[in-house]
Amino acid sequence: MSARSMRIMLFSHLCSKEHITGAEKLLLFMARELQAQHDCILVVPGEGILSREAREAGIYTVSVSYPLLWEIYTPGPGLQQQLEDLPVKERGAMSGLLCVLGEYAPELVIANTCVNVLPPLAAKALGIPVLWMITEKMIDTGFTPVSVNYINAHADLVAGISEATLTAFGGSGSEANPVLYPSWHPESIQPEQWAESRQRLRGSFGISEDTVLAGYISSDIYPTKGLEHFIEAALQLCPAGPQVQFIIAGRATDIGFYRKCYEKTAVSGYGRRFHWVDFERDIGKIYPAMDVVVVPSLAEEGFGMTALEGMLFGKPVVAFDSGGLREVLNHTDNGRFLVMRGDVAGLAGRIAELVADPELRGVTGGRNLAAASQTFGIDMYRIRQQSLLAGMEARIAAVKAASPVLAAIAKPAVLVRGNDPQLYVLRDGVRYPVTAGQLRLLGLPPVPVQVPQALIASQPLGFAACSFGEAAPLPGHGGAGRRARRKKRAAAAGSGRSGRRSAAGRKPGTKARSSRMQRKSGTGRGQPGTSRSARRSRAGSRPARGQQGRPAASVQRSRASRTKAGKDRGRRRR
Image: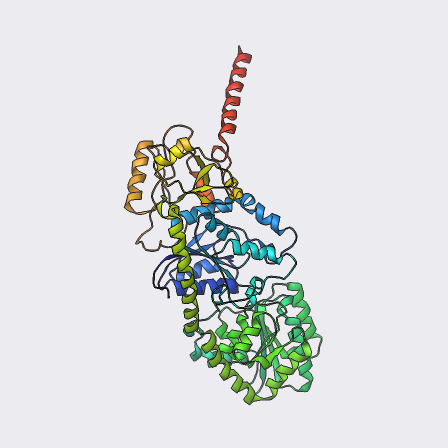
């Protein structure tokens, strides 16, 4: 691992309550590896399976709501405008992200998947280095360069989980676009339980050991996962003899497609040879029962974890030549079992070879386990990850040297400037216009972070005179000093308010959670503070409307209107 420990914040694109995606699993695996040496914080867009498993693994986890931009994966003519409008349209999410980044002050941000665009935008606005992990192969259209340019502009380093995922970026390279192949922890596959799992599943369907069981497995079943092609290939094998049966494991994401596939087997006359089971998160209960694993994906897979999992359980694997699947099979000397995508007859032919030759199945499966461990095992993963972080270390050091703002400004505030000369302090999702004189009172160095003008415009406007007076310095980032300043401000204001962070778990490097930073700063009527609306923006929702988010002129007009209305009512009574 990297020689120096640092604080790393990882942003997941999803956190579903129903199931966990491959990209979420890879991010969790990365976080578990990083936390052995680094101070890791996982940020999720909501509570679900990923956040629960992360906390069970001892990873500090924070929930902040932010949307995805799926169009960056399938770019079209309106993508450029969508990207430009994003900070303004999603101002609530941007406020929440800026707040959590400012509060925890990571030295490195890792964004997972290409569609997870807001966390890198917020991180770069604050001058924090970004490692953007691409886990899918983007659809190649005439507008793909728009996606690529945006990702490159908001990342210090773009890495992929395969060479296929980096195709749009000009391919992979040891420094320019490195590859961090997925891996696994050896203890997780539990080989001592394989025999029992095999007997249990096969026995439930009455499948004898003399029968060859060819398997298809997918966490979510929909057309591009190739189930229909698997069934068509299987039906071509059925007339040759009764020694082969088929098992299909997966969640019916597309109900209509799933029913269509089932009915195709039912009316074929060979329906008894097909066995349907739900997807099992414990893959050790499924793979041991199979003799051949088939991965007929029609999509350009980012990697092909199903193929690698089959090899880990010592099974021969037949797959379509789709995206990362090509790399998995070629790197393990299984090129002969790659079939042109969509070639059902070729798929049936490769499966038939393995069905007819028990020795070929045994030799291939044994070789696969050894080759997969050598090429994609945990030792190789750690070497690749160390190289990845070493490349980012130099960038982190350069950013610190060039941006004294990051080291000197009291968190979670940062001095920014857009395209115009006006300076703002961003704090808790609110922008406060400041002058050179106020900067001296605040003790902030007059070196702003340059950010997009749209980002500044997306933040609610606060009032500098009320919030940043001489008697109300910005709070520090943490520790006893912060608590002392909070008590002092509460005593001065006479109405201080404190709360608790909404994030579950324990803050890295501390024995107990501290209460939320005092939101009020300064005294007197009319101060905006960051009370209820700020707490909502921390959770990712849109900030409350009101004085905090309105220009000073509009507030003055509103007060003038109320005064005039009161005088009019008085005249009418007289």
